[in-house]
Image 1 (cartoon, one colour):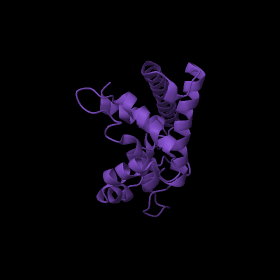
Image 2: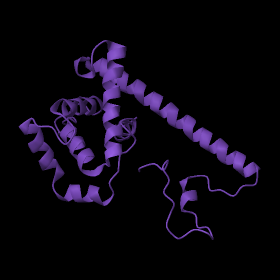
Image 3: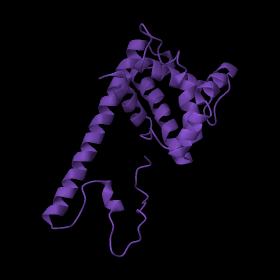
Image 4: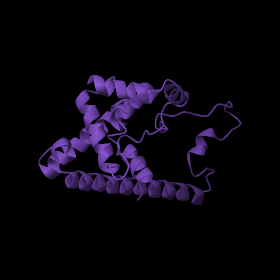
Length: 189
């Protein structure tokens, strides 16, 4: 697994809402989000609903995934305040809550597994925990996709017309307008 894939998987674990925000994401980038994140970290303030402790936890999670080698790691790149700022600036309230719940889960799992919170765990304990959570998340997603394929296969056997993925919500029908259907269970990304 390479660093890019690891970051994607941890982001998925922390709520599965990696690129929420569409045009707001671009706007946040235009306003020099890196500089804002660095200033916020230096001030010791939180970002939105993220406390300074939350940002420190984000830094440690990211630094476990992308440690310092012959190049600076995630903490040196100020990934924690950047993530907090991006979540605050671009995620809907519901998605922010999902992301923050993911952070809480990481700390709770560390407490269960290592008898200490993530911040007090050793680097080896942190890495083992994140790897375990990543495997669990992948198994969950694989099972979910298999269930969806089975459901779609069952529909096909019954002769129902369907598209095997979420394009079905956007498929034109004679009794619908041209806008895609947005349902409560549609993923935010």
